[in-house]
Length: 193
Ligand SMILES: O=c1[nH]c(NC[C@H](O)[C@H](O)[C@H](O)CO)c([N+](=O)[O-])c(=O)[nH]1
Image (cartoon, rainbow, N blue to C red; front, side, top):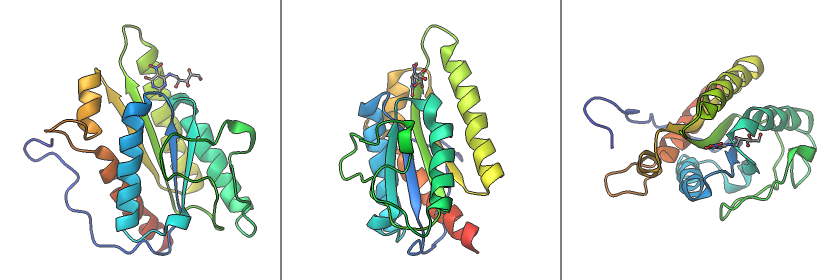
């Protein structure tokens, strides 16, 4: 998948046992979202993050990712001592998610990292550009305003083939969700230091 010198490099060995991580994913392009979320979750678990400390929530589309990440993190801070099980997003939208093994029951404590996952596929209008630009800026703003790593899991691709490759659905593909999971563990540990 990565040609030449491009690629994330080897993830440093870090212990995610004390981390609490949220994965917020869009439901648009679910066939691509599901493997990406599963790839991220797999690497969180391999990095030592406890299953009970991984919260997965869904929103309609990528446009809703920034507000969902912001509300989820803010709620995790406020409710850190008595986090309710169930949808921490409040009325933001269905917390049901098609990703198997996902959960909306939450342990306590503020999140150490959030992975925002969406897939934007270019159409024949400029809708793609507007969403991609605004969501990218929004996610960057959250991580700087709140001081919480927001891993950029927004695939912005020109066609379905590019998306399938980056979701690890082709023989020559690589699941970028795995890189996002590794990044969340590393940045979450760094945030606690
Ligand atoms: O996540 C996506 N949302 C998309 N649109 C929905 C958008 O994110 C919002 O959910 C919607 O506009 C309602 O706010 C997409 N397209 O329109 O192509 C897309 O490709 N991916």
